[in-house]
Image (cartoon, rainbow, N blue to C red):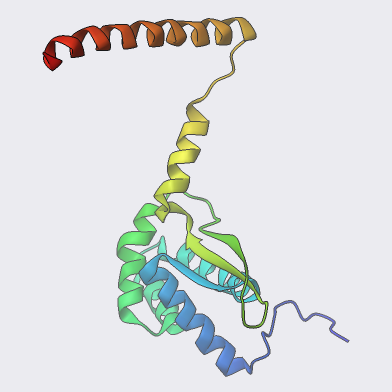
Length: 167
């Protein structure tokens, strides 16, 4: 029976699992995005998000707590200097898991796990969606007609300008 067994053991001993999660967290902090299996990514998310929350408060004790989990002073420095500044106003949810399909060798589910604030492509699409507002059908039809009229005028002007240059 698995009463009160809340986390995935990932088929490893406790020491191996802790070392693996520590190494994966350091890689995630340094590279901002790593590729792994979905099960490991979910376990890593539970491991690294409390550390990022702890890094928002830059005290000696919080640095010691984070270092005891990561065991890499370069990763700790990066976390407290850059990442904590970037996620200071975010209330949680610092990582994102994007599934990429199955691995060829053993058909394991693969994914990216990345820090949310460091993916510029996702940030651009979110900004575009946020700037759009609701409009009625009348105003939408008027805006589509106006650019169409401008588009028909522009090629005529372009051909007249290009003709003297060709001579």
